[in-house]
Length: 110
Length: 114
Image (cartoon, chains in turn cyan, orange):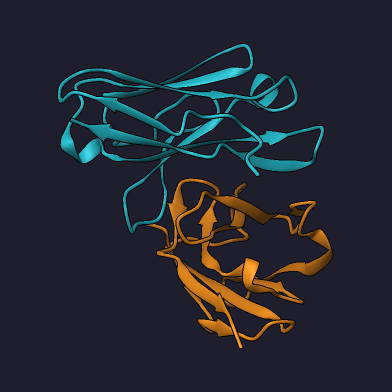
């Protein structure tokens, strides 16, 4: 059972911009921020953004994260076929004492 | 470059204990302020946090699994381990170890079946 809410699927055309959302509450996203992970089919997750919205070294500038209140967002510009993946957000929930995940968003690049 | 590798049985019988080890290379568990964790993913489903250990040895567990989980660290071998007891089919999943969250193992599928 997911603690954070993500849309199950998003479809965008090649070259367009996709914005994925992750909604929590004041005990998790609103308090601690969220990390974003990309998971290609059959692969382990890969960190896209840390909870302070910073990209890991070497990560493409096409990926950017932000937060407004209890909602975190991941924006992917200039969509490429290789961006087709599942995207997960996760945050520490200080009330539950639990690292909660969103259910994941499947991004399709048309 | 930090690398993590999970190891352990791929098949566990119901009611028995699942045991996995994560071997870390290219860095030391004890040497810097990182969390080291276990995450699992049932086939076709999303990610679930099992628990983490801080480099100081402080442990954090998913409350829903806490009664069945033990995470331990062997600094001398640069490994950390997961034990999950009283397993059922619902524990069938790919289990990942991670240096939360920047480095990941490839994952290992553990199937619970008689």
